[in-house]
Image 1: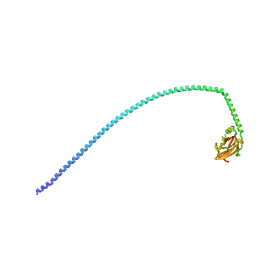
Image 2: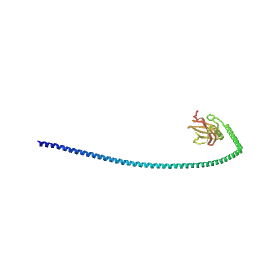
Image 3: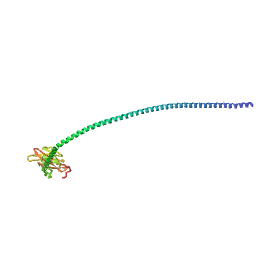
Image 4: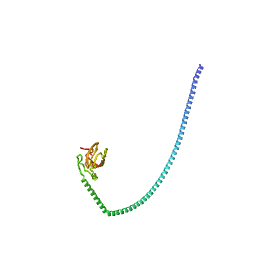
Length: 290
């Protein structure tokens, strides 16, 4: 029975010894893992510290380079400003010298111009005096010429007044009192100068085609030299009117749509198959009222 108990006791102690070994192994493994982690972290921290040190060194180098560049740039700017100031001062000196030379030259030119103007003025005064002397010598001749011109104008005006007085009014072939009638070129010129009507001269030859005179058309149908009569057609406003057996210097009257005063045709001269005269046109153009 004691043997049996001894065996049983040994069986229980063996597992307990095994459990202690295992615990030690596990603890050692945990410690090894912890030590490994600590070593890895220490390595990483060291690496980061080295990188930070390198970065700081590079930054210090860049800062040094920037400081050097800034110093050089400041030196160049100061040198440029100094040179520029020297150039500006030199330019100002040159400008002042140029201005002084320009002013002196201007004074010289002004003096020359004034001298020339003085000479020209003296010459002009001399010419004016000479002109006054010549004018005084010729004043009597000018007065005589003007007097003669006035006399000629008065004579012409008198002749014109007499010509106008000699002009006649008569009834036209339509029974309307006509304007003044001209029987020759002088009287016709006098009528033109009066300005009451427009006058268009014409010469008609006997033919079938009408002839344009002003705004109307005239066609000579017959010219009787022996009886001093003629016949013609008048075309106005697309209407044809025959004026038969009319006398020399007889106003041939007709109306148009442009005037309430009649147009007049006056023939002053008749020859074989030809008549000469004028068309008298009112200057006031309004609608005819008949």
